[in-house]
Length: 215
Image (cartoon, rainbow, N blue to C red; front, top):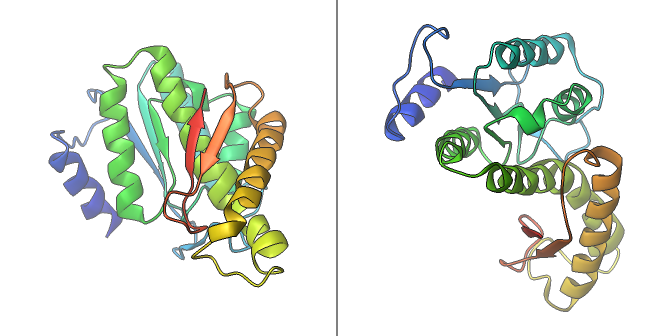
């Protein structure tokens, strides 16, 4: 269960799970699917409009931040990418730059573990480095995995007779398209977040994951 997974990850990272948020050094906010079903982030069922549970979740994060609490967000409402509605709501209220960490990639356990590790490292990072890591997570989980990847598959990969693996000679076209789409996404959704030039590559020669460098 998620409760056991969260507890085990906190302990494995050297943390201590607490029952009271009043004395905690860090709040780990875990965003779960409202109906208990974990769907694919890029599968076409990832709406922009928040449901009541997501709205309450974002309001709770706001209240913690207003109380000067440090908050890390593990977004596991969908597998392999961000919940669009959560990201839209957090962007609307300018929450993301105030977070210690955010992750929404791959499995629930990977997301939770990465979020905790990222939050712990953030305590010894400069503000610039923390923001740089957040920027990569936003572009990877939200822009690419939840949105751009499915467009690349339907518009470029499949029409040319390729599959998601062994991209080979299609790679330069995919790199150019991904960088273009990420810059558009950045202007539409992340213009308030400081980012320089975006460079991407496909280190495993497949569409599933992308390597992102933000200058």
